[in-house]
Length: 100
Image 1: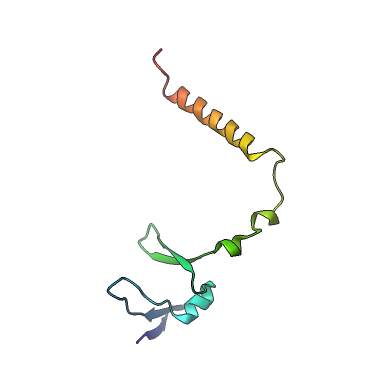
Image 2 (image 1 turned 45 degrees about the horizontal axis):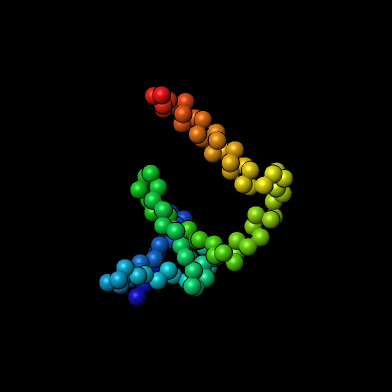
């Protein structure tokens, strides 16, 4: 039920959409994007109106992702977060001074 077509160095394929809005991503596109079933994809619209489909990594694929890069600080995250909140508070107070 699908029709494949190549033009301008891009690949196209027509797929059916069910009444529930479901469509099957063709196998060659799933393989190209690294999508495994069950899985998730992200639909994103560009400023030019094009719709982009991207693979969303599963938690299992992301495991250890942050550990691969070296930490840029030895400070605890809570300390960094408190500091950032204080900076945000000071900026907000400077922008919107209270009428005391």
